[in-house]
Length: 89
Image (cartoon, rainbow, N blue to C red; front, side):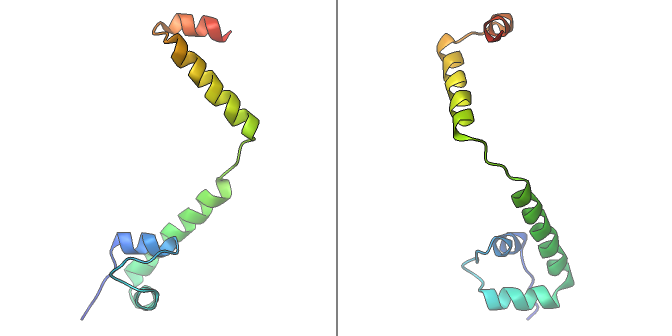
């Protein structure tokens, strides 16, 4: 039987999770034998690594300030853009 991998299965495998319909051994075997699946896996894996490397963790006080500012604007409920700009400055 000629089994191919779905994009969902490849994506789950890229993140170290398995689909309930496949296991790691089957996934690895198919990735080795199916060039198209292997190319998709490599692309997704490289993309995942780039995203993980580019992630930053802002300081907690900065996040708190942004949330407080957002709450303050929602309390004011200003619909006029000019009023918002005036209050920001």
